[in-house]
Amino acid sequence: MKVAVTGATGFIGRHVIAELEARSVEVIALVRPTSSQFSAHPRVHAVPVDIHEAPPNAYELMGRPDVLIHLAWSGLPNYKSPHHYEQELPAQYRFLKNLIESGLKSLVVAGTCFEYGMQSGPLREDMMSRPCNPYGFAKDALRQQLEFLKATSPFQFTWARLFYLYGEGQAKNSLLPQLRQAVERGDPVFNMSGGEQLRDYLPVAETASYLVSLAMGKMDPGIVNVCAGVPISVRKLVEKWIQENGWLISLNFGHFPYPDYEPMAFWGDAGKLSTLIGKSI
Image (cartoon, rainbow, N blue to C red; front, side, top):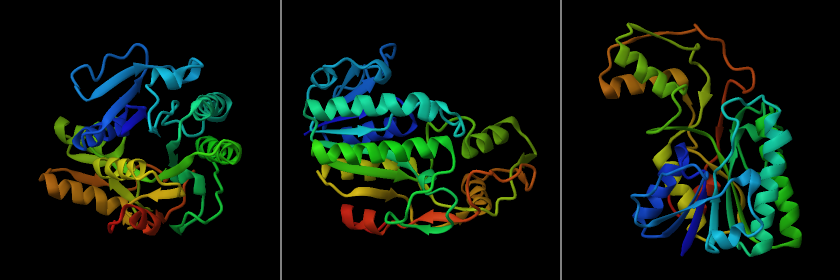
């Protein structure tokens, strides 16, 4: 089986590549033309492709993979930028449409829990999407475009709605890296929000395993929440990290306001994911 991955050098992509290598799968990593990564990976064939300026024969250049795990998306973490629907959305759809019409049979795309908008509580795939920021809107619009395309050019389609991730390689301005940096500097206090918001957090390596299982299963499930399915407060999560690592640092709750683009309490329903991959989440 031949699996292609866009966004292969990113936070999630590097873990997906590692998971595919562990399963002895032939991997095609789509990278920017200026990238030199994956040269030391014998099972990974790096193909330079700029999604925004992809050539018409991109599918042939990729070696006609059986499935594409599409993780690439630029402009983050600025969720409120119009870039997401003005530039990213049309480029993404144009690229994926070309691959499908050229023969791609199976597609797994990374969506976002922000597609649910300000809805609270457990979020299920059959709930109506109500995005309230440009990033969530653009992702949800791409999903709908691909569903319309599927009606005329059939392909197996998985829309993996990702919730909150953490782990090695995460952006430096994310919560865990910021906490680690504060500890390494010897800061006595770590400033954060009130920490009472409930979220759904999943280690990135586990997320990568689920994405690969969905891709290799040759499924056509539509929307799938990729999540832990269990809410945890940000405060408890940070306290857990501190305890597990034996860090000596105090927490200054309430220093930062809560984000205005997400509700105080929401998490994913992982029932569909559990059924698809055949294991309890």
